[in-house]
Structure formats: structure tokens, C-alpha cells
Length: 428
Ligand code: ADP
Ligand code: ASP
Ligand code: MG
Image (cartoon, rainbow, N blue to C red; front, side, top):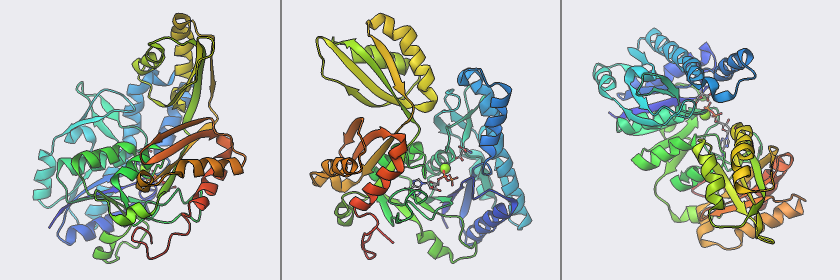
């Protein structure tokens, strides 16, 4: 008997029929003798619907003006789906109880709409499991010190599930979704994308942070920190498939790297349309300018990604970086009103129509020329590279948004990701 955490995404919870299917699947696992904790997302479209209602009522206010209320609002989506799942399980004859994050309690900091989990009290959950109940805990949310409901950022139910699995020292955390695993790239953009049997934790971390929305980045960070065994698999199979087959299906996020992994130089391609580029032009090239620009941005709680500083000409330089598109207007405004006057820089410009495309693979550590191949492929497609950033196992480029799909497809083909032999240990 093992303690298992299941997480079901929005599409998997998208209708009463699907919720019934989830209930039957969970009941199958419980009847096989496992202690089950289930973390559902809101029914698909619900979070967007709720946030849309708020926007209708207050279109002109800055987005963070009512963050506390947005969290209270958005958290109801998961509360509804969790209660519905508990009802469906009980209808299947399976004892179950649902809890909102604050009832557990899942304690977070107070960064509304992007809160971080700080602690989880497992006492109630353990008592219920001991009493033979399936425990359902809302994804995406927690409660801060002041008793305010918080949410963990879009896609945050993945993080709830992994954090709960870590707190309970679960045997495994299974992330059920609308694809049957982690692919070489988003199969909705490249139909030739192939499912990976295993992906190393480090690669998954890079892919998630570079925009592969199949797992929220923080869930992968949690899995790494607490060594939570993690698997991504389909919720769209028949609920009554053999449990042992099901337990082996999908993609395992592996903490061990084997030789096969090094063979595939590039394992995946990630892309992100959520960023915007900001340039501060004509900055005096003196010590401390990066700090003055980026320090102000960080103080405003805005995360910065790719950064470039140009070679200086006549004592002046240009400084560019990317931020999340949601923070774009706020960052530009901040730089214009507070930083530019102090720095004596000439101009702040920006471009919200960019995207970032990244190739990821632990094989890149031991092979040279991978980045240059990426640049060649893009140049052959006539795609201009605006910014580049690299790490040991990834190379990212910032390009015009309109070339994103072309770039991803061309790179997927050029790195033979559609052609990896079927008997390779990593592919199916
Ligand atoms: P859920 O609602 O279950 O959390 P998400 O929509 O958040 O599901 O994540 C699953 C989606 O992630 C898939 O439908 C797919 O379009 C997208 N995706 C992006 N990159 C990948 C990838 N490398 N492998 C698999 N899916 C990916
Ligand atoms: N319902 C939330 C969202 O749509 C959280 C999640 O689905 O993971 O972002
Ligand atoms: Mg998701």
C-alpha cells in the first residue's frame, strides 16, 4: 500500500462526465489498496471566466489594484471542482472529503496571484487517510498569515500537487492531463512531436522555465528540492485500464541520468509567447547601471529574464531585457518615470510582440556546435535573432512572435526530434 497523489488538470475535470471518469479512476486506485490524495484544477475555462468577470467590472484599473479579491474569486473555481469530485466519489461508494487550501492549511506568502507555498499542515489529511477516505485538496491556492486566500499563479495546481506530495512524503505524484506525457515539443504546434518515456529533472526544469506549460515551473522546482517522484500521463484513457499499465504510462521525470539521455543532444524545444522586450537606450556606461535599472524593476516585484548589454560607444550603451507581458506596461512606466531621469539615459523602448524559443538537452553539455546549428537553421528560415541566452543545457533566442511556429518546426526537424528511433529508451 502506498500514498499516491493524483492531480487532474482543467480539461480532465471539464464536465460532469469527465469528473465521473476521474472519480472512477481514483476509486480504482483506492480499491487497489492505495491511500489517495487528489488535487483537481478548476473545470476548463472557469479560471478565465472568473478573471474575465473581474475585468468587465474594472477594465481600467491597474491589474494589481485588486489582487486580493482576484485570488478570492479565482480560488472558487478549484473549490467547486473539488467538491464535485468528492460528490462523484461518494456516488461511487468511495468515502471522500474535499478541502480548500485554507482548510488544510496550505500556508503561503502574501504575494497575491503569484504566492509561494511556505508550509503544509498534514494532520487533517493523515487522519482522513487513516479513516479510509480519499482526500481531495483544491489546487492553485493557499492562505497567507493574515488569513487571506492566495493563488499560486496560472497553472499552479501542478505546484499544489507536488508540494502536497512532498509534505506527505508520497510514493509518487501523478499529473494527469490532456496529453499522454511530455513531448519533444508542444504536440499542438508540431504534430510530429514525440513523447519522451523519461525526461531528466534538469531538462524538465529548463523546459518548464522556458515555457512548456505541461508543468508549472515551481512544481518541477519542488519535485527537485524534495525528490518527489513525478509522472505526467493522460486522463483520457479508459478509467478501467490495468492499473499496473497505467502506473508505467506517460513520462517519468527522472532524477537519474543515463547514457541514453546523453545520446539525444537536444531533447526538447520550448517556446514562450508571454514575454516582452524592453530597451533602455543611451545609458551612461558607468559602474552600477545594471543595478540601477534592474534593481528598480526587481523592487517592483517584476521578474526579468534574458538580459543584454551592448558594447559602449562614446561612453553610452544600450541595455535590453525581457519581462512577462503582464508586467510590460508597469515596467516601462517605472523606467520612464523613476529610472530614466536619475540615469540620464536617452530613451526607453519596448516590443511586446516577441517570443522566446529554446532548445534543451543534457547532451548539450558534451557536444559543441549545437547553438551555432540553431542559429544556422533560423538564418536559413530568414528569422532574425534579437537576443540570445544560454545555460549548460539550453540555448534560447528571442525572435519576432510571428516566426515562432516556423522556428519551432524548423528546429524540431533539424535536430531530428521527429525521427528518433522507436527503440530508443527515451522515446515511444
Ligand atoms: P492541465 O489543464 O492538465 O494542467 P495544461 O494545458 O496546463 O494542462 O498543460 C498541458 C498542455 O501543455 C498540453 O495540452 C500541450 O498543449 C502543452 N504542452 C506544451 N509543451 C508541451 C510538451 N513539451 N509536451 C506535452 N505538452 C506540452
Ligand atoms: N485553474 C488554474 C489556472 O487555470 C490553475 C491550474 O489549472 O493549474 O491557471
Ligand atoms: Mg496546467
